[in-house]
Image (tube, rainbow, N blue to C red):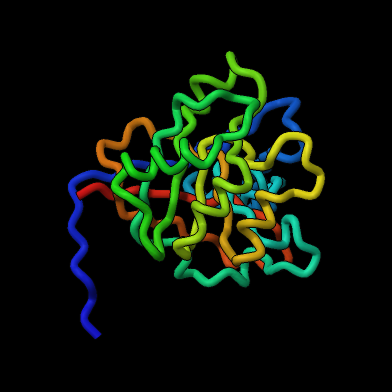
Amino acid sequence: MNAPDFNYSRVVDLSRSLVPEQNQHPWVRYQPNVESIVSDPESVPPEGRWYVVTTLNMSGHAGTHVEAPLHASQNGASIGHIPVERFFGEAVILDLTAVVWGSPIELDVIQQAATQAGGIRQGDIVFMNFDWDRRCSQEQGHPFPSNEALEWLVAPDIKLVGIDSGGLEMAERKDLPNHHTLFDKGIPLIESLVNLNDMRTTRVYVMAIQLPAMETDAIPLRVLAFES
């Protein structure tokens, strides 16, 4: 089998940096601990004394991360069981930067954003740009699609959804309808993307390969967008 042509002119990193900070929420904590593995530094030459390993104490939901069906379904697939093919391919970016926060994003708004982006195709990755980092300190309540809108969005058999906010669930709904709309179809959810406003085109090639982590509902990952 011949390798496909892969031409691009620009790469945009859509991943949030992991930075250790004090008083982090347990859900998003990230703490590296660097330890020397040189037990007798005085007996080795200076250039061999800095020989360390780093232990990471972190949440699976730290930084830009992907959630698996296990996050909301007791018998759902863990991160390591999601087919790797879901994490790369063509992505369409929906401009939802003008939506009203704290209220459902209705079907017609999602449809208009999809039309402006050139449409949603079978097998697409769909990223939603809410302009989270700029607006989150000024607005009340995170943006979220109505369940009708999300059902329409996933109907073309898309394979991955990503958002630049920290959540997609409908306000006050304890039965997690939006999570199940995705996870019951095996569609993972990437949260806390960055730099979607820096994209010059609405359709890009994305690579967001996850770690093969078993028995976990979420894991941080690196998300790269390649513009042609």
